[in-house]
Structure formats: C-alpha cells, structure tokens
Image (cartoon, rainbow, N blue to C red; front, top):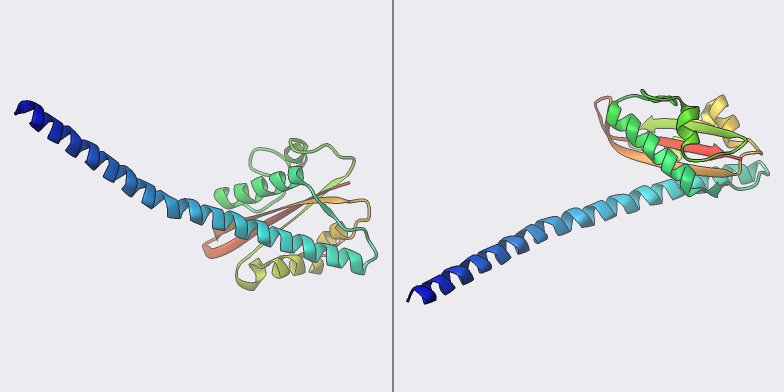
Length: 173
C-alpha cells in the first residue's frame, strides 16, 4: 500500500509541477510576443525616419543615407539612456558624445541629431519636422559628406509625459 500511495503522491506532484510550468509558459508567451511587437514597431518607425530623411536629401540633390547597424546601436543606446536617466543632451552623464560614438564607429566625420516629443511630435514625421525647423539639425541632415546613419527611438515617460519618444540620429561619413 505504501508503494501505491507514494506512487500516487509522486504522480500528483509531477502533475502539479507540469501544470505550474504550463501556467508560467502561458504567462510568458504574451510577454515575449509583446516584446517582439514593440521591437518591430521601433524598427518600423526608425525605418520611416530614414525614408523621410532620404526624401529630404533627394529633394536637395544629395545621395541617400545608408543605414548603419553600428550607428543604429549607438543611437538606440543613447535614446534609451536619456529616457532611463531623465536627461536630454548629446553628452551623457558619464561621457561626452565624441567618446560615446567612438565606441561604435571610427569615421573622419560624425554628427548627431536628437529630438523628443509626444503625440504628433513623437511620430517619425514630427521628429523629422522638428529637425528641419532647426538650422543646426537641418545642416546635419543636408551635409553632403555624411553617408551613413543609425536611428534609435526610445518610448516611455519623459518629463512626466507618457507616450514620449526620444530620437537619436547618429551620422557618419
């Protein structure tokens, strides 16, 4: 009898463990799917910014910017850092822009545009529009010697504004 009870008990525990594992898996699957959806939305918005920048460059008879993975990584890291640490600037709390960008790429000429907004100002069109209304940001976009770009958008709450988007565009020759 003891053997049977132990066997029933062990089988019951095994079933409980399997049930718990299945429950945890069901909870995690939506989170993984949501993360994939967020990453896809981020990439789509970054791609839209690139399309808009290249339309502007074409309107000014300039070569299109090529997407750079290294510059994208730098831009995404900077946008995320600004959002997470609550600052807005080219230099971070621990290093200057020049030092930061050098971790990702070596180029004879580099530059950077940043913007943030929410609502229509946080859309790809709103971000690019902000840059084009600023003489210094516009000059970077229209610099003929810059041929590569990496775009990084971070989404969250910034300065108490929910749904904020912080954008970084890192450019290189």
